[in-house]
Structures are given as C-alpha cells and as structure tokens.
Image 1 (spheres, rainbow, N blue to C red):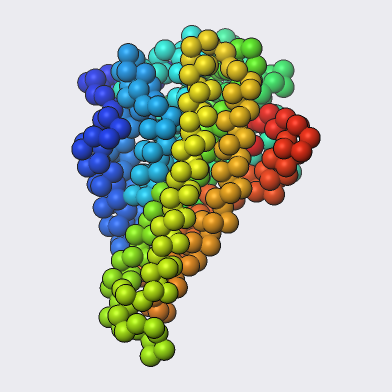
Image 2 (image 1 turned 180 degrees about the horizontal axis):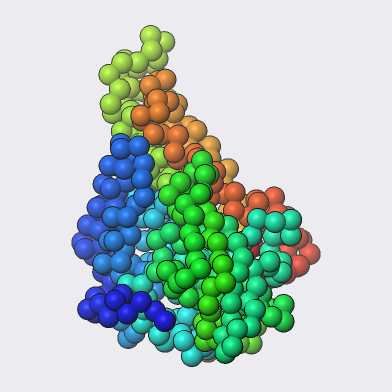
Length: 407
C-alpha cells in the first residue's frame, strides 16, 4: 500500500508555470548544485525535498485533480529550467513523470485514481525496465519474473539503470508475469526484499541513482500489477521519456552559454596576437559566445516544437480514453528528429566553451567538463544512427517508426 505518511500530507498545489514561486524553487536547486560541486559532489537531497514540498511531480496532473494542469509545452519549459539549474534533478524524475503521464492520459486501472492522489500528495515514483544481460534491448523478455504466491506474487530479479529509484517512494518495475507477458509491478520502495544500490559509475549525470535494484522474493499484490501497455485501441508510443532527455540537454546548453559569458567577463588578459586588448571586446571571442547562445536557442525551440505535437496527442488520449496512432507517431517522429538534430550541435557547443578562455578553464575545480560529460551521457540513450536511419526510412519509404518505448 502507498506510504500513508506521504499521501496524508496537506493539500498543496504546484506553482504555476511562470510564477515567482517556481522561479524561487529553481533558484534554490541551482544554488544547491553549485554548493555540492564545490564540496566535491553529493546527492541532490535538498532539491528532491523542494520537488516534493512544491509538488513538481504533479505539474501535469489536471487542476481538477489537485495538480498543476501544465500543458506539455509548459512541462518541457520546466524541464529545461531544471536542466539548467541541475541536470540530475529532472533526470531523476524521468520515470516519475512518465508514470504520471500514463495515469492522466489513459485512466483504465482501478489503482490509477489512488496513484494520482499519491502524486498530488508529493509521492515520487522511480523504477527500471532494463537488465544487464545478453538479451536484445527493447524486447519484452525479462529475467525478472513474477511467481504465484497465494492471491499475489513474489518477485525476484536484478535491474540496472534504475533512474530515480534511490530517491523514490514507490517503484515501477518492468517484469514478466507467470505467462511470460510483460507487465509492470508497482510497489513501495521500502518493501522487504528490495535493495537499492548506489553503484551508478557513469562519468555524467552522476547523482541520478541509475544503478542496480536487487529484488529478492518481494511480495507483490495482485492489484499492484498493471499491463505494460495501458492504452485502449492501440499501444501509446509515449515519446515523453525520449524528449525529456533533450529538454535537459537544452537546459545544459543554457548553462554552457552562461558559463562561457562568465569566463569571458572574468578574463583580465589576452594574447599578444589577439585582435583586441580587451577579451570582452574581442570579435572572435564574441562570435563564439553568439554561436553558443544560438545553439541553446535552437535546442530549446526544437524541443518545444516537439512538445506541441505531444500536447495534441495527449489531449486526444485524455479526451477519448484511447490513443490516436497518427498523432502519437508524429510526436515520436519529432522527438527523434530532435535527438538527431540537437546532439552534434550540443556536444560541439560543450567543447567550444573552452575556446573563450585559456588553459585555466580546464582546471578540475572549474567543473566545466561536466557539461560535455552530462550531454554525452544523456545522448547515449538510444543510439543516434538508429534514430536517423528510422527517420530516413520513414521519409523515403513511409515506413512506420519502431513501436517501442526505447525508441
């Protein structure tokens, strides 16, 4: 059952999308990220406490259900701002926001109403599908399986890339049922038999909790198991988890531009062969800044264009209780184009940042390498060549995009 201490909290609504309250929360998250970097790292526990207290996990829940009622565009604007403040934070919430989206779009399960109430109450969901084995990524065959146990089940297995699970109250785990069908088990993170290992050792997105979840004979009730595909009348593509990564990248590019400008303003000397004695008036260096600012604008604008397509798909699903496949595929196509179009631009910008300063910018204490490392980690989700090939096949031959949540 959900943690009653969490779900019984007083009713608090998320701040509106353009409110001073939201700006203040994001500023606090950014300040905490700076503090933690200066201290050598550490978990963003303060940020997650702010997310809970201000119900940022419920921004997409309709206002009539106690949520923020954000449009998709407003939601992605929030993700971009959080990505600029601390890219680990929106990444931690990726599973949570995806689970929330399924609940509000296609409310077919008896538990959906309670889970939405939990989300409005500040509960955070985490979880994982992926396992480290030799099976093809994206197939529906897991080693983590439910076995019958009275009127419920027992669950054993080992998951990796458990993004957000270290900070979560409830886990959403992709598993196979006794018949071999893929389903989702949803249960409290502190249930007996659950072990969350803080063993993510990636060189970017370091505090996302993307490590191992060990499940040993975990009790799962019958009503805690839901279909993997919650849609009626077709499988939803749910391109949100993919586009969210690139919204974070757009936020990082804002930070790249900010840090480059700060570096340039802080320079007190230049080279004898520079075209200007003052770095801030050097046209070559100003051109670099202009390119970085433009890269951030292009990434953000592309993400928001794809967000508008998701808005249309989500509005139809919410109104009709089923998906419109053409709208879903178009949203998925724009999310894929965003990845292919933004990746090279962003990685180049993270390298060009160093061109506005001398060798001092490469000092570890400056932490400027974090931008490239975080971007490279984000873009390593779903290889770009496969995306580009699918887009090309769709454009030339009219071939449908892969119907898979990993795409």
